Image 1 (tube, helix red, strand yellow):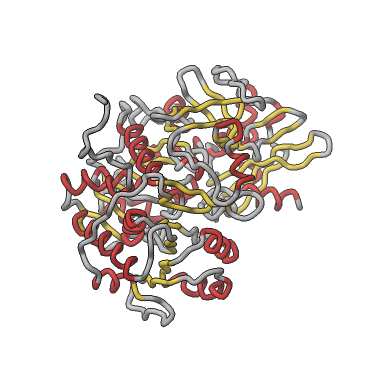
Image 2 (tube, rainbow, N blue to C red):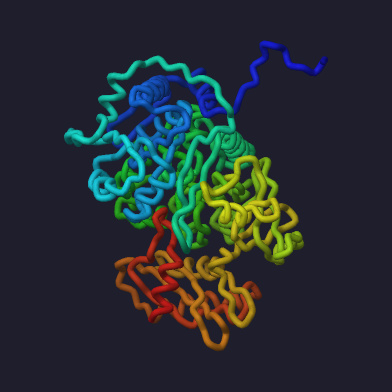
Length: 545
């Protein structure tokens, strides 16, 4: 057959190991920084990844088994991102912010065989280890000279130091599962999300193409210095460590998220590209050290929650090139990005609006906005429906949860649970989560729009809009506003917020019933384990008052 491949042709499976080729060929001496003191090169990084594979093999680990990590964002975690799946095992990134019972559930459900445990979490592991459903080997991680617990198989650095340096990462099926992590919902136990090598490689390529092809100074490229401010346990730090490694950029891993340390690293290491949820950026900009830190030229993607206009304005005034992107745990996560073409650091209303939009779909993303019958709604920038997606890097199911998997993929598209509208030019704007939408008198009110308007009022640190049960209207909008520990006249602020929302009503952007009946003021707003505003908890608290 004339179209048959040559007998010796290499099929090039899409495996995570292939992401190393460019960085090792073109920038082997590029730096990777961990914390405030540890740094090494890509050449050393790859050497340690091979040593990690030898450590696993010596421990008796076999391909297909599951290796879990409980650590802060550091070089060890980065090594596990590569060494574990390249060995053929599954990397389980444990959410250290879950409750002990939830962590126990994920360990048993994922069927972990080995757990790498930072010294900060030894006590937690000890408190649940008698309920492990299978034998689990433990490896000790530390940032000091603390002694390795007697029940542990060894200390990570000592094991790496004594391991053989050579390891041949062989080829295997690119559809082999590479990673697992757990996402929490409003009810029930956490759900396991998993990805194959093929999906992670395609996501890396799609993300780099989407972020580098735009005509904008928000691009991610080889000249950047990258630092995540999204925990590495959360959707592989949004996939950026894989992209950064593929490109060979300088990487900075901050350890624990302490504002002073983060700001010092940004300035000292000249970090140019990061990503985080809105609450983290708010925390950084509210820190005393932010006043004296030069943040000009820092590019920051905001995801996980909508980017409020007030936060975008504050960031831009500090010289931060901030913009929104969209994804979720089940989408790996990169799906859309705000179109910042030609904006520069534009603080006009139009510039702020463009940055805070959900954005346009990136390469290879088949995105639709549909009604309950899976019919497409008009692309008129007004008609709303649920956002559904197809792209080659979406999770194909929840781990051992067929009922939830069928619900996720009903109709052959992944259902995001997000309400959105989109315009003829392909710009998508999410207006709410299905579970968060406020329905008053049979009409929808966008909680995200209320939050964005309130965020522009002086003194507002954060804000959450929810629907409170109402006997007459079904629900009425209420705001929970964080003012930090500032001494503020809440009465005057309440009037200011209502005036801003009323102005939006007058201009035709909101219905008149969107003006909230109640505004509550607090020092801080409840958060989920990944730093998002916890509307479930807020709803329970306010409905019980």
